[in-house]
Length: 240
Image (cartoon, rainbow, N blue to C red; front, side):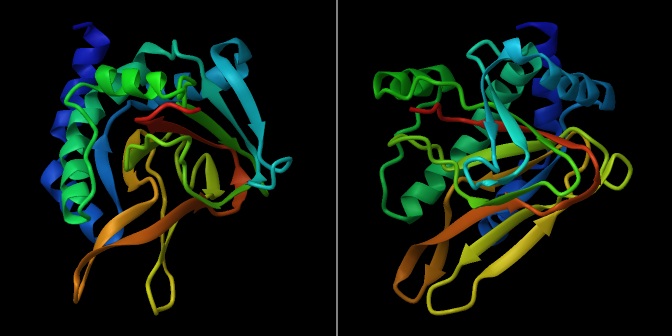
């Protein structure tokens, strides 16, 4: 194991994952402890200026996703990004399996992230989905779900790379839950620099009188009012 991977694994392990699991059950999102140092955050944000590291750039306004840009890393992301993805997968895997069991669905996710990604690739989902996002004043992200093909991992993680309230204002992470026969419920979270937010890709199990049902959830970003906001998106399935 490389020094970077070992360091990241220890940081991920230091999070109270029982508390994360409990909060995910209630809200569909939950913060982690610190995963990256401020220097690491700044170094990752600076990579946005190196287009050769990315397979594509998405202009959100052009696609009517909102306003701002994001870039997908190639299948050779920085070691820090790869280490985060590898260390986080076994932590969120038990939640994914538990949610699938409650909803009476298959849980196709193996113990190994590499094996899961091989399944994605065999199914035609062979493009990297690791995202570096940049927002400037006036930018925002419409409510959406990151479903890139038939094979979907039900949780993902976003890591704040800039200091909220210092480097930028606004730009809170938004989640909206569609509740059956009731008004939607929304939450907003200010991402802390270097900390992660685990959140559902598309839904969470909700207890009803008849058992468990799927509560549809979408996420987005509120309008950035000042400064520049960068975030790293860690996604556990690849894209078609």
